[in-house]
Image (cartoon, rainbow, N blue to C red; front, side, top):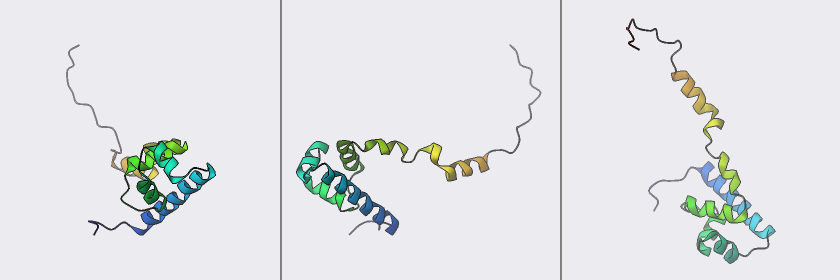
Length: 108
């Protein structure tokens, strides 16, 4: 039994990603063994990725995307510049005005 349950939206996204990877493999006319070999993983792991099963490693997934030439899409995953919600939260924590200076003698 899993230590945690995977949220349904995550499961659905994993399944869609698996379908996309399978489509990319079939468009290249590669067998499961061929893509698994190129990615450096075993066939069972590739099958689990294509079925969208949670628990497959991120490294295995990234290796499959690399083997397919689709790893460039990983550059935008969790990009802090694209995180509008995080930016809003950060901006809300900033002070509204600059602090005043103290009367300190600077010895230069």
